[in-house]
Image (cartoon, rainbow, N blue to C red; front, side, top):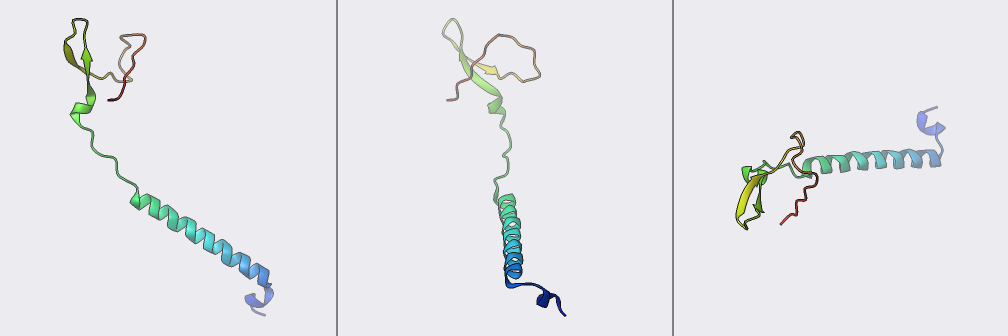
Length: 80
């Protein structure tokens, strides 16, 4: 008796469906992995923002980092 003789038609269909779903999942994962955009290099200008001081003069200031000590209690950055 061979392996095919011991399986019913429903078992064979279920096995083919499971194999197909597995192959589709692997193929989809490969597509996402290789077609996803790569992170771009950061520009030095992204570390600065424009600010207007009390006298109305425009200044270029460096953005703070998470590791820096706090200088104000609240800071809001509005993207341009």
